[in-house]
Image: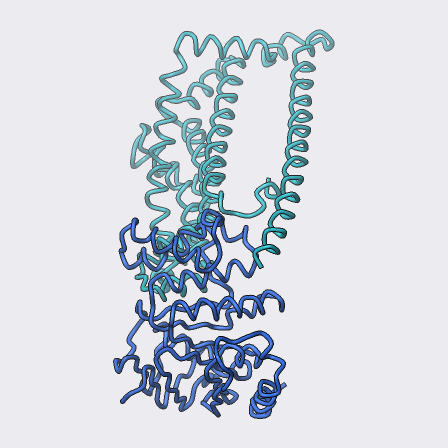
Length: 256
Length: 283
């Protein structure tokens, strides 16, 4: 049986005008199970975000196949949604209207949009902030809106492109806990790109390490920690052994 | 988590409240100072004839605020001002409306399409570099000295600031936000509606402010240069018969119109900018 998300031999080269072409992905393979929480770690510029954008349908690979449900991805679709690193909230829209964005583009009725937004506002813990504008929110709250917006269209797959990278360390830890809680309730397949090995292990069922550019899958690690994850697990020997193992795989790829 | 957020929010609310009060106080103070200077200058002007002796010839070209005010009052009371004012205002309104109707869509199209931009950019740059008032003789020849040559010159004056600013705003639209709405299935029109237009509104408003100025300038110059009717014509005729009071009255009406229009644009701007942070600081 073909896995839920299935990518084989994906190649993509950027050709910026007046500059040398950059090969972002070269023979990239990945398989993701339905409901799996998969993290992708890799050196900067290895094509992690590029692959998420291909899955999202914003970029087209030069060659290779990318399938979801056994069907080729040809463009954006409401079965996938992205949580962006820099939040990407529309600053002229309130929290509520930002969350409703995807539904609005799907021509969902205003009444239905409102119901969905209300449910998500409480799911991500933003009750009372529905009519606030993004500039009135802290970074953590902004990304809660980003998460709620991505969940609003009820996608099967959640793509998260370093969603907590712009947050301070403590907010980040708390957002990880929140994400796990929401993931448990919403039951989505998650592809989570990050630079932090801790974060990847703590959240994921599996961590995939990518090579340096042009990016290809180097090695996958199954995370054996039980669920629900507890913060204390981050200081257990299993956790640290895995962290070291992943780091040893990753460090050869990092070019300073 | 919720607790720390609430705390953060309270602190920032207190901070911004303090900023607002001091900004308000500052505004009142600076307004009072500005008004005081104007009143003082008017008083000096009014009393000038009592301190300075003027020759007969000089006195012919001189007037005082009270007389200008009386003339203005008389013009409005008798209703003689409405016809020329109406003529000028019509040319202004039609020309500006046409410029907005053409400038905004064109600016958006040129900003979104590299091909269109490449085709028309040299033309726009050249046209914009030329003072549009040089077209006035030609326009009068073609369209006559009625309302349409005025409309045309107002249109040409107002079009380019609107077009160029809209274009600039569209070019500067946030790429991330465009990708965000695309990822939710937005088509080109949705991208324009949801991101590009709101994102370029500050640019468009600046363009509108410039356009209003250019439009008024167009009306004035066209009417000075040669027109059948209008506020500018009234002023030129008054000047040639040494009726200084009426010239000043016309000047004040033009100034008041400019102020009102600028105020309206500012009102629109503030309404649209409700979502923007630090409104007090931009004052």
